[in-house]
Length: 197
Ligand code: GLN
Image (cartoon, rainbow, N blue to C red):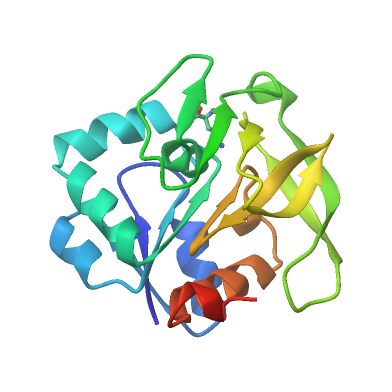
């Protein structure tokens, strides 16, 4: 499987290392032709407003929107903000790949960032605790009842799957657990949405 990591800004390398541990090819994506060669895409954590500017600067808005129609995208933190249908505090343009409202920086500033050990429930697996790193994280304020909540903090989803797409408001790539990356690989490899558990 060839998994692209949008490499305009943010935490790209930890995803590449983690995919390497799983024996999968992670490739940095900066151009539309690089994107087209991928089976799935991770939009990493970083700063969503900066990423948005760079996406427009490099002409990647339409290629990314088209990619998400056919293949799986996983947004991590800033990437999850880009995937949302509505963004608040402040409002910001977003792709609407997942039907959800995300509030930016909902847990405070950089020095209020935190790590919490939280239970995740991935389809077909027993629940397990994961070390979740929240860095100026957004909060999912509203989400589609059709979406699958894979984990929560304070009654808000921190991991959400909708159709072939995934979002996490924390940074799994900064921990050592590979299970979310493995789960994303199953989404990327699924032939049809219905085939997903
Ligand atoms: N606060 C950042 C934003 O709004 C996201 C932070 C992160 O990705 N760790 O884009």
